[in-house]
Length: 556
Ligand SMILES: [Zn+2]
Image (cartoon, rainbow, N blue to C red):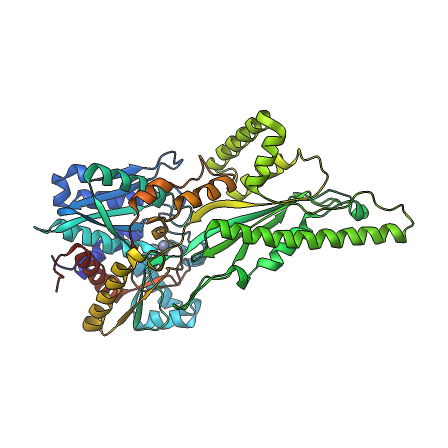
């Protein structure tokens, strides 16, 4: 078995790039069709028609699917190659938009306008060492490598183990593809008796030093908590009678934005999660008038290494309680003083701070209001889900609508703070957290480092987490019984719109590693992938990892 040639990879790469498969659109299906067609053209699959196909994603409004292909050799041991077929939008390309999917033409145009680029990009352009364009690095480059390897393995006369290729949509959005692929993998496992031993993703890697490549033995987790505050509406001229929800929410934002307390460091490996940042913070007013807003809503992106959702939510809830207590006392005091100084009678109403998790608020309302309330709630969730699926609402707006409606019945005339979750949820995974995976992943790391030193005089380091968020998050799940209820009960949109196949991920759990080409500036105009990695080094590394794990002899 040989390593695919640079020409083989380039022949797959350029037409693949040329398809605009923007994430969250039906055009992802064009990229899926390209992969399917490629597989169908291979002689092996022309006689093994039941070993590839498109696994339809249940309930997907865009009717997308996961393209899969399985080369069967000897035994049950199976390596999974996964890559995503979608790319992010191309707004950033400005005047070069037309060329975003044509690497050669784009490079020529950039050479005419080098001033459009920052210094490092300009140098890379002059050196001619990169392919430029949307998806070159993230991640049709890695996808082309995986397809070429599948073709190579399918031609082998003898092969220990099995190789499963998965080409999944929607990674840049909600990872609908990878979540659905877990069901497919579980089905193949049961039907064919496969034993999954390794998942290889080929997302691009970033380097701190030029001659040192990076492998990742896991992937950072992502969780998106929301904070909702319902205040007490008053005319701006009667501020002591009201409670502005922005007061609490803005204080929560101030306490949490870039908070090092909410970031995690991994002792001993020098890795840290980027501190959290708020992706949106808004009040409910659609037009100007002189009243306070009734509610405010915000969501923050929080990346996790080892922390589980329960910890994240309780940390945030604690911060909200502190902020709400401070703010109610400040507002009570100011209103009291206003009453004193203006000779009014002492205030009867005192603000109290009340902070709930979504789960506890909903349970409280259901037990107070009974079955009729629960039915109304379920109808409400169903109607916003339909609007979401039609693209009429965002997940944030849909969640906010649910919260506004269910808190409307609250008769206490007190502000309410609710903390919960928006989709998506990416569990953090790492070989460091699974000792049973550690030996294998570290062994692969050493083998590939040695290979890279011998062949190209380069080093490869193994990091614990791929920090760009990836589908590897769904390669394994520990503590599913603990995680599932926290996610499902605190995410108002959990169910028809968004869900995680916890059981199936637990069932297929396997170690994961990212082995991808060096790429730069993903999602930007200057997205590019190193030619040497794409055409030569990464295919050799991925092939060596497969061979090592499945016990085949390494190609020269
Ligand atoms: Zn990617």
